[in-house]
Length: 544
Image (tube, rainbow, N blue to C red):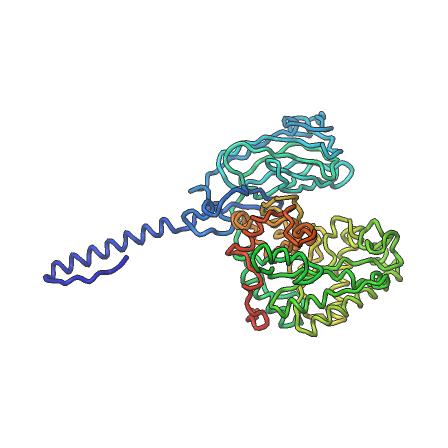
């Protein structure tokens, strides 16, 4: 409200003007607070999944207020909705799925089974009476062991749920956003072989935004300043911004990043993903040459952030298939459990020999004061890589061995340890992990935030650590991620046709992410690109 000067001829007139001015200012402030406040409609979560309306516009999300992570902006007041349970046998059964008599130990004295082929599923139509976030509780049991299967919402893959061996237990697909109305929930065969009793829909609890208040302290007490600076920056922006990232084996001028650069009119991702696969001893023995360190140095010199994984090709002794696929379980006969419990002493030494070679590569980066978001032994719980094929205990011992060897024996203090085991039971311990990562490939043109996996990772440890999307297929919609509270520290799209079409002319591949979404992501005010990074060589280190 503007103040105006008036000539005053009488004391009475002056008093009247002052009174009018004060009263008007108070009314204006009251109106501003009413229209500009952020409604406190946060809704909660704990473990697994996301669904969002990808047609939601910025205007819809931001109407009347600045968008806040985890805030349901679509209703003026949160409406309390009672729990609703749906019996599996009352759903639409597809493929080989059939109803079985379960007796009094099952709700409704029945359950369904027969999830054995890719066409097997159960569809349940639910009614949502108030738009907002909801958790889906599935009562299931794995037949013969723990099983994992997929949850679709209105035809879009949204979550995965785990079923414990034999006995019925709950698995939760959390914090799924629903508009008011009818929706179809499908439980679809992935691993299959489950008994499905019922599903309960519960309104989500309020989101605890303290999950974004993570420590910048690194697990290595001797961490180098370059690592401390990077972690300080990442924790400063965590919960408010997303760092853009892209894997590209050919460095910052490789085909994948060329496609992004051409599409966006000159933007580079803030994070470059590289792989030390070619530095594995058994690949070097077959003529491989790694340029990952060279590309890391180049990107660091341009002000970028480097993350590295290691598709660890098994030692030659254990290769049984194609040598360059020696990181896959099916191409090796390595038994990590025997190595880690002392039954295979030669194997233990061969692993140490491989680690020594990798340490030499990482040493070059430490010498150049380059911090690395170091992500070894990734996706272990899936079992498709040899380091995960012998179970969680052997894997955790290997993680600790790798940490101790690289940190204590070789003194590599430039590493920020990014764990990506993808399951709480595979977590090696807070003292060995700085950041938690999830790798998610939801399909083609699936732009949901994957908040369920985000929250699952948040709950691996308390207090929470930073959670990042360490690999992704398609990009997520930043507006949906902010709405859902899935504030990934960074994303890192995998290479190849996830982003580039390498025909006669290098161009963006739209197989997984359409051009319009890639542009939205890279131009979004909450997504940071290379040109928006501060000088990380001088960034202030947070004090303990």
